[in-house]
Amino acid sequence: MIQIENISKSYGDIKSLSDINSRIENASIYGLIGSNGSGKSTLLRIMSGIMRPDSGKILYDNQNVYENPQVKDTVVYLSDEQFFLPNSSVDEMAGLYASLYKNFSKERYSQLLNLFGLDGSRKLSTFSKGMKKQASILLGISCCPKYLLCDETFDGLDPVMRQFVKKILAEEVVERGLTTVIASHNLRELEDICDHIGLLHKGGILFESEIDSLKQEIHALHVVLDEDKSIRDIFTGYHIVSESKRGSLTTAIIRGDKDSIEEVMKNSSPKFYEIIPLTLEEIFISEMEERGYDYSNVLF
Image (cartoon, rainbow, N blue to C red; front, side, top):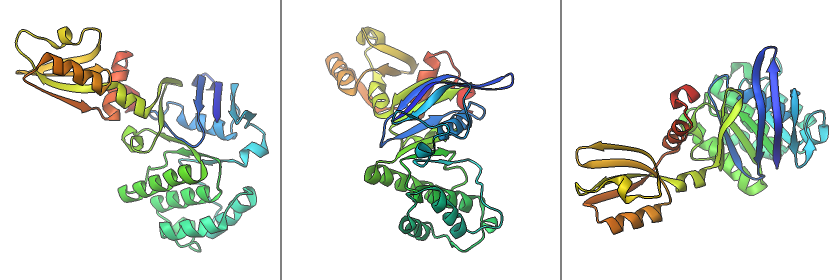
């Protein structure tokens, strides 16, 4: 388990992180969402042990990561900007990683090199941005870490390669129990891979939840009612997040599981109704609006 306890970090007068707390379970994929400048990269650097927080601590299985080589050997951090030795090839970087991480697997490296279709002897300086990102990912996974921290992992990858990387990460979670934290400014990129998600804004976590629970707790309802009935009369005791009407069709966002909403509808005998699951982005918009935030200002 990763425990983030009261983490704060400032750069002079600029407060990057303020009293961050979170717990990330093992063998899971945690999505850290936030706009540029929200503190994502700073948090990941602190989590990797590269940077020391002003206050608080990061614990991996109850051990502090900072200045702890034993813990750092289980953690790989993939920066948004790839750093390679000057004039080095992928194979040469693999040799460096193998000297730093005792669990580095040459067999896994060769396998991933073939899967990604990269030439290990080719100089990385001749690679495109997307190819460099691929090389960074396969080197990190080849270290066979227990914890993988990824900063904007999918940025620079084409759609096919993005899905391929997601597939590999999911397999690592299932087969090896890998715990992955993926920081991104794009919520849509993480919807189909993460177990949990947290929203970082202006140095603080505004919102954190398990994705499956989020999707089960809120639904969209399209309904045509008799003129003498209203949504709020029917759903007494329910939290109606929003409601709009176009002609005879009413659209409402309602907190509640699908079965209970279905039961209310059946008892109300509407002319027409349809219960639709919300996308993760729609759920976040609702959550942010309820908290008084403009979603577009938080993530874009």
